[in-house]
Amino acid sequence: MSVLRRLTLLTLPFFITACGAEESQAKTETPAQQAAPTAQQHFDEAALKAKFSKLGLSIIDIQPSDVAGLLEIQTNGGILFASNNGDHFIAGTLYAIDDNGGYKDVLAERQAPLNAEKIAKFADSMIEYKADNEKYVVTVFTDITCGYCVRLHNQMQGYNDLGITVRYMAYPRQGATGPVAEQMATIWCAE
Image 1 (cartoon, one colour):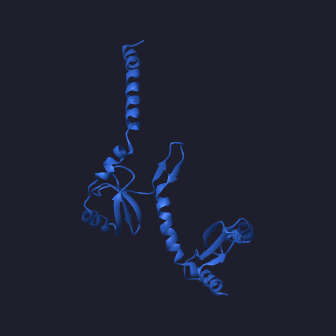
Image 2 (cartoon, rainbow, N blue to C red):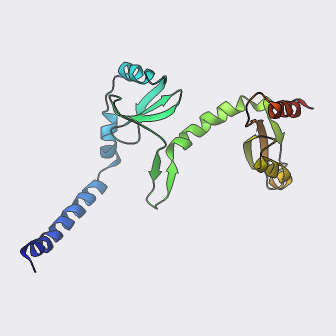
Image 3 (cartoon, rainbow, N blue to C red):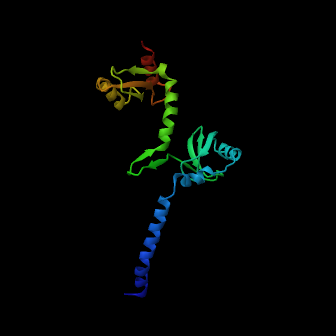
């Protein structure tokens, strides 16, 4: 056996032990210690607003994110994660992993109440198929030329029987002008 292989085999246990010690130290940190970098984040809000305005984005809110060292920036174009100076940013969602190996979409969880408020503003423009024993409410953006939408509509009674209220919002896939949009407007305006 070569000297290099022997040396590698002799030092390998030390590296493994050192890696394990690092992991155990990381796991013994308290939540306050883990959150400390987030709590100490400093950023220049005016500079960030100026930087993101060059991208055509208006910043609505800035706060430390769940990830140490990143800011969560709510813009008119959605949520971004950025460095404190705004030189780098990530567009996308944030997932949290639990101890059981499950995960959740953190942004979707935060965004759900805001989306519900936005959709509620259009309640008078919806066609609703209310379930007698309502357990759930689903809002569907529908188009009369969509095969999946037609199939959903044909199965409506089954959904209602399961306690699912279905609310339709018109969404003509070909745009707001054209024959499909006109047909859908006729349907929505009918009594």
